[in-house]
Length: 421
Image (cartoon, rainbow, N blue to C red; front, side):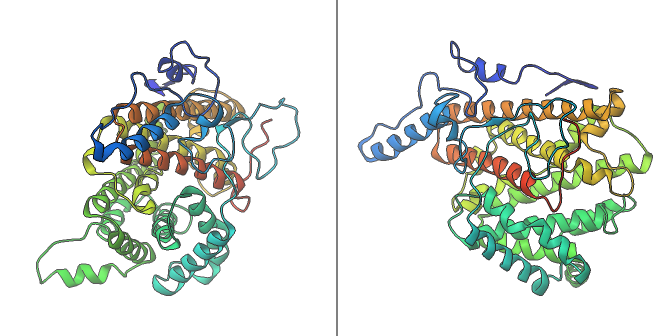
């Protein structure tokens, strides 16, 4: 957590957990708290069954730091959370496909191979036939991204392949825009704002006069990111409620704002302070992905519950943690890419004048604190607002956080670890 400009406040990551759990041992585990005072239960005869199920759900989320209760926010988790021990500095180089030593995360089962294969087949067919997402020489990179495995891991409770495909198309479109507009496949900070704004109209359509509407409509097919955004959004709106679709548009606007901040710093050759970088990463992050978990799982978290400050805090912390995971696992990949790539280890090393290794290990600490704070915030939100959709949504966000780590850790096509242990 960032408490002051330029300084990461390294409060022990378990204190937030302990504050919700007086008198209990502060073991580093998953679901961080036990409800005090119990959940409100509807006691009318017609609601008895629902209330009982609701109380059980809250109890599972808030049971405490060990045993079966550790899996309640994480339905796809294989076992207890891991905080892998640091190895000695002179240990052998880190092996690709292994979790980062010292990182706090929750293992998940390997995604269902049948679902993975079918989602992978369908998304590639969509990319090639419907939106012409990439030229032939990028096919290996598209396959290596392994979208099917990624989204099946992140949405373990999705009721069907069709539901999974909604998330997978959106992820493919978002990644294509990042590559083509911002990163290594022709991206540039120069003029990015105009490109992003026009692409955003594929998600949030232009309402204009009859004379100019055809020009805008034609623009939706002008490049691969706009074609993909437009098509993926159409599939989302067919399954989502208007409120869910608008939530996604809002979160994508946040994402694009983060892109613009990073682009502005690149244009002016500005190295942000650590707290400034973390602020940018709260916008330029994975948030649009976990916040559609209710759509993908086939229900709706009502807008008034999604907007609750406690729920918003949990979403923000979980999304921030997933993004630091990306900074850590993509560290060597970005160092090997042309140009200078901002990530948290790079910013910490330069701003706090420490070695690359020290900065990387401090980034692990930042991630771990964000994870513990996310789990404490999710438990607090579930205790304060024990409506079944809130509990289910927070479990879905937690499952996305876990699946995201699993994909980063095991995608050896894209990622390998630095030799810091």
